[in-house]
Length: 446
Ligand SMILES: Nc1nc2c(ncn2[C@@H]2O[C@H](COP(=O)(O)OP(=O)(O)OP(=O)(O)O)[C@@H](O)[C@H]2O)c(=O)[nH]1
View 1 (tube, rainbow, N blue to C red):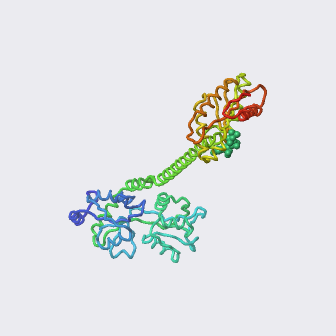
View 2: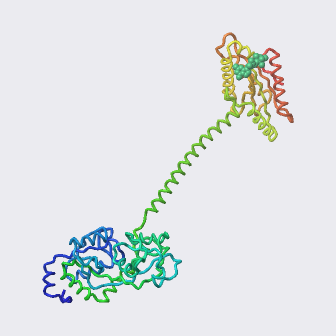
View 3: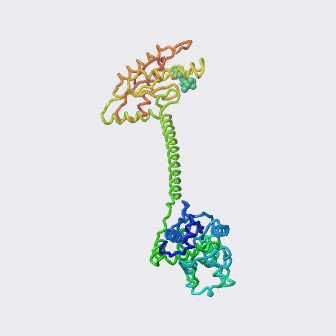
């Protein structure tokens, strides 16, 4: 306070004062604003901090939601000072202003393709945008009567109107235009002209507090040029700190998550289809090679097995034989007991054959009531023994049918060198035919 050289009445006034209530523009960065934590910030806030220390009284922010409201508050004496104000006639009945403490040129922000503007008169027919209620608007209107000025609520709104081509230029101070363009990512505009008009910033003091006005004038005068520049440089060289915008990251992650889930779902569906397909394929392969009634290899499979036996024979000269079996008088079984019983008989004989043969023997259903056995490593004598054993088993088995037992006839032959599969089977068939001729329930070897 000493350097202020206060008068006695100023000192008395201060002594009675607990704190100074300050109203501000909550949204006029970089000059001033109220940040997301409710703190007073910006160039003016630094000045007011310095002055508060010089005066020796705390300066308390009275929060408002707009510059308009701050003007209303000072009219209603809810605050003592306005952080920054201009001397304009409409305010004079409730507000006094100090000497200016900073001064800025007004500038034009336009699309980048607009050539440099030296004088507003050059472009007087265009549409301009300014923030309403700012003193600068009065200044421009006075100096350029008839200029088409659209008033908007905020600098960013004004800049966006110009960006969208809905107005020719936005008028504000250079630091304000720069700051707003940076803060809101407006990169398609440039400053294409600086006006001769200056915007002087003073502290506004309630008209009924003339001593406070004179105190503020003293602190402004006592603020060194060095201090002034230090504050301005601090703020104007500040890089804007953006709050990290994680929303895009979250959206990306959500997108990836959805893609992952869809891929998993798709994989599971495909996997299930594949499993089903494999099962169906297995079934189809089984069906293509096996007889449905008995489950034994079918005629197609027997042909394949025959070819394999043939290859082994040619490679190692290992003898193999074939047995053809035909159930005797089977028509009579069907006729007497019905087809269902006939099927049961076929199944039972199939089981008896596969259960009692060697693992290396291959038995399959050759036709309706006919079976065929391929016996590897077996000659006629061996095959005959196998056939006889089977014939006896069938003849002795109880099929639960009355009257009569079930028997079968057997034709046996061994493979002869260089003959075809068909020739071999035909010979076995002839042996079978002979067995039938000889009264059935017999084994004949050809
Ligand atoms: N139930 C049933 N009968 C079948 C099947 N396949 C063929 N048959 C019957 O078997 C009978 C075969 O009769 P035939 O060829 O006249 O010979 P068979 O009565 O056995 O007399 P032989 O062979 O001369 O002893 C026919 O009545 C066919 O309908 C089958 O899968 N199920």
